[in-house]
Image (cartoon, rainbow, N blue to C red):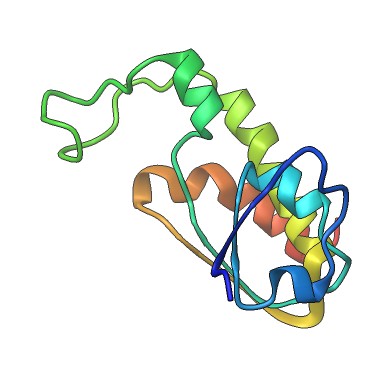
Length: 126
């Protein structure tokens, strides 16, 4: 059995047997859009600071004086893009989750507040 499925443009939709016990390699929003509704009991996401495409366009992150991974974040461009991305993945995750499913997102204090407002709205149903 193959543990990794590589997404392709030819793959229009996935069924549960296509993805059960497998990792799908591809753009998260594209792959999630191909999955059936209410498929997940648990969604685990490591909250990245920026989606790869946004980070590539924004350039390297500037840090407050320390090497990568140390000290606080400096100015980060493209915050609106990050907010739109966050709302897009949360919308897809909500569609994918079963009614009693759990969403588990980890991140640092640098980025957790970037997606938390979207999540509060999502949880409250507003």
